[in-house]
Image (cartoon, rainbow, N blue to C red; front, top):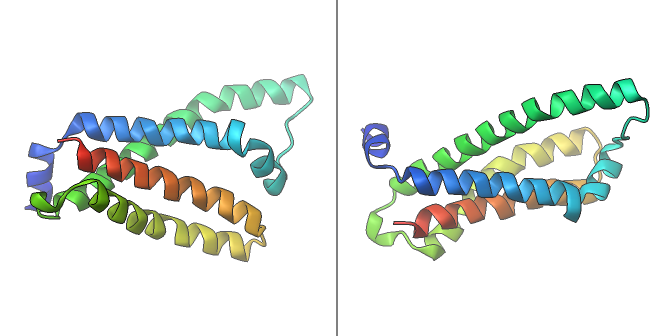
Length: 146
C-alpha cells in the first residue's frame, strides 16, 4: 500500500532535483574538490595513448547515464522512506536525520569493501564523504519541498 500511495502522490520535481543535485555534487567532488586524491588513491592513471584516450572518452557518456539512473534510484529510495514518516514531522531536521541514516546504510558496505581491498583511510573518507553529504542534501531537498 505504501508504494501505491507513494507513486500516486510523489513530488517528482523534488525527486528529480535531488537526483540532479547528487549527480552535480559527484561531478564536483570527483573532479575539482577531490579528483586528484581520489584518482591517486585508486591508482587511476589517465591514458597517454590516443587509442586508449578515445576508448575512455567513448565510455564516459554511458557511465554518466548509469550514474544518473542510480542517483534517481537513490532519490526514489529517500522519498519512499520519507513518505513512511507522518507528514507533520517532515522538515529540514527530519531530512538531515533521514539523510544521515540512509547515507550510513549506503556507505557502510562500501567502506567494508574498501577495508578488505586494502584501500586507504583517505580514500574511504573521500568516497564515504561524498555519499554522506549528497544523500543528506537529497533528503533535505525532498523533505522541505512540499
